Image (cartoon, rainbow, N blue to C red; front, side, top):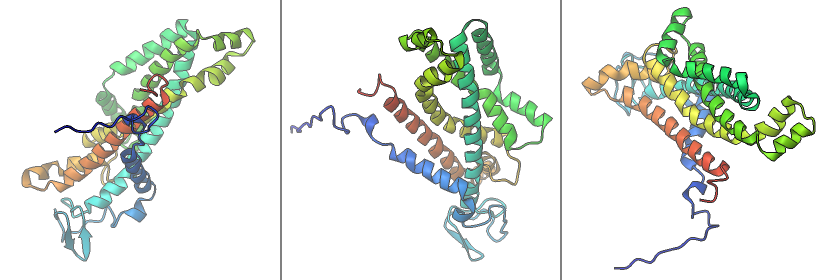
Length: 291
């Protein structure tokens, strides 16, 4: 009738759930990197090879001496192989977009927070303009000016997501600027460049890392959305969003696998990104570390 309660000491790693290593996220990211870097070794078939003996084959179907573990699409292409090769596109777009947006946004945020005045006003007004700009409309405009491809998506993602870094870094620098160690550095005659990148940057880098982890999932989801709308990587390249678009008609005919499995891949990566980002935030934020 009565249950025995177990009280964990504060130092016990099980006492705080956020202290547990997010093995789920690590596993998903490990699979993403392995599949993205070595798709030819992981994928069982050529993702572009059509097999007319296996059109819309359900999962675990054998046709032409080949096992279609996750089924095939309307052209007889292996769904698993296309998901694996699609991870290369997702990994490439997310890493490049997150890297450049973090560098641009962090630099502008440092400048805006440290110099304030007209520099702060200029950076924030530009950031507000980009935030107000619809992402899809900008992608349509860019696609009309250039050939569709991963480069367009990367440009759109950089121009959209640098604002998040700039706002967060600016806010932290405005607070750090009034701290004693910054005032002492100014009094000692340190150059603005040294103050920015030696004294201020190390104190905001934790927030940048957390945001970058969270944005990996956001970029992959945005890339899938644009590819679904035909604004991303063109056919026949196996982008996850394009796979969703190709297989959506099959849902009405009970051919769910061509859409469900690419959708699960997107959900897993986005979920892993959110879990890892939340764990890092709690680990790196001194205000949350001992909760």
